[in-house]
Length: 316
Image (cartoon, rainbow, N blue to C red; front, side):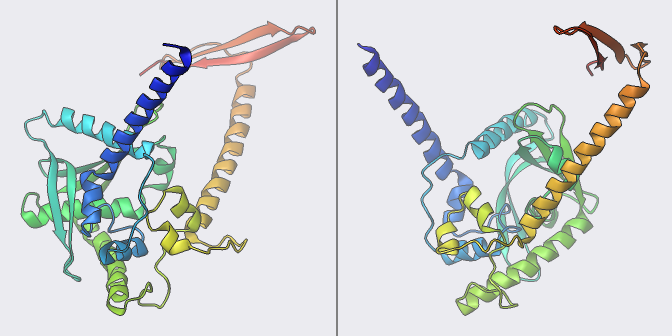
């Protein structure tokens, strides 16, 4: 067999694996639930137009490529659930549903982990810095609130129960977790906001339009975001879209704010680091917590000397 034939076989194997992964993702329980027009826990706090189009059964674009971040997150979540599931008190991948009191809508999903009086939903992100500073999205807060109140309605948790979004870094660079917690009263307040949004969806479905009760379109996300996440209704929502050149969508404005804040934080951190370095000139040794401080002097190839501060913290 020559090299060209061998390469063709390798390429075909790679394509076969990607096709299998894509088919698995398209036919995962959450995807099948969406196809069946069943509103899921992970969707109810999201874009109102997406919810309307899903319930109305409007055609979706066929997904032809695998979404690796979502696939990695699902795989990581499955491993964690299998490990936690070995504990006697843990229940994993439990069916869950909540009935919203105002609209009467029943929302269904699959709960990652239930411990005694504790509801846990696992989330993975590429690094956790942003969620630590900004907190979960409304969609994520709505999801864990639905699980918590749903299990409360079943009588499996009481008024003192708590729901927890547990974030892990799928890039592997940050070993610690970030956990966001909600109580039963707080979860009820979040679901009231969800219902207010779903009343817009009900109005649109009843009137055969794409508009909420205020007469405005319910496309809650900007075009750039819908394109980025490959929303299956992208073409239906944004066909013929022409950028105005004006940044005015709340999500884009919020992202811009976070970018400017991050730049300001970086500038401030650099200034504080420079001042601390200046004050540590000539200081060497070991701190009580084991941190070591050392100045390393090196000779430049062109003559002269340079000093570099070497600070090392003990591994936890």
